[in-house]
Length: 287
Ligand code: SF4
Ligand code: SF4
Ligand code: SF4
Image (cartoon, rainbow, N blue to C red; front, side):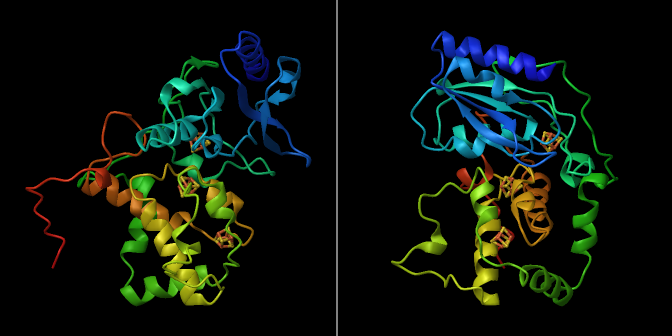
C-alpha cells in the first residue's frame, strides 16, 4: 500500500520535472533486505518499495547536492534532514520530502531494532506529503527529576559505574573496531569532505587500529555528534563488529536533552546548542 503510494508520488514528481531524482529504497540483493536507490526516470519508479527493512537513513545522501531531490523520509531521517538544513548542507527548497510514518525497522529475523523501541519521533517532523496515517508516538515515562526512564535507562545504568569501569567498557567495546569507517560513512551527520582523522596537515591522530588511535577517533566522532545525532541507528547497523556505538552517542544525546533542553532535528529555526553562545552563560562546568 505504502509502496504503491510512494511509486505514484515519485512518478508524478519526475514526470512534472519537480525533482531531478527520487531517493528511496528498492529490494536488496539478499532476502529480508532493502537498499537505497536513486530513480531519475519515471519509467523506473516501480523499483521503489517500502517495508520494515528500509532502515538506512537516506539523509546521508543529501549533503552538498545541488539538484532538486524527492526523498523518502522516516521520522529519524526527517530529523537528520532538519540538521542538514540547519547546517547549510542542503536547502529546504531543493527538497520534496515524502514523509513516512514509521512503525519501526526490523532486523532480518523481524525483531524491532533497540533504537526503534524507544523512538519518540516515528512521524516525520518535516514533509511535503505524508504517506499513510500518522502513527502513535511513544512517550517514555519520566521519573521525578524529569529524565526519561525508559529512554535513558541504559545510559543511566552506565553513568552509575565508576570512572575506571566506564573506561574498561569503552576499551573493551572499541578494541573490537577494525577502523573500516562504515559507521562514519553511514551517518548523515558525518559529512566532512575530509574527516579530521584523515587530515595530513596537521595530522591530529594516527589511522592505525592501535587502541589509542581507535579511541581518539571514536571520542572525536562521538563529540562531533552532540546535538546532531538522531539515534537513527545507521552507524550501529553498519558496524561489522557489532560495536554498541549507541552506548556513547546516546550519552551525548541525553546530555543535550537534559542539560540544554534540546532535542535534535525538531525545528529548522531553533539553533542547536553548539551553534549558540550566551555571554551570560554561567559556564559552571569549567572547574
Ligand atoms: S528510529 Fe526507528 S522507529 Fe524511529 S523513525 Fe527511525 S526507523 Fe522509525
Ligand atoms: S551517530 Fe549513528 S545514530 Fe547518530 S545520526 Fe549518526 S548514524 Fe545515526
Ligand atoms: S563500523 Fe565498527 S568496526 Fe568499522 S570503524 Fe565503525 S566502529 Fe569500527
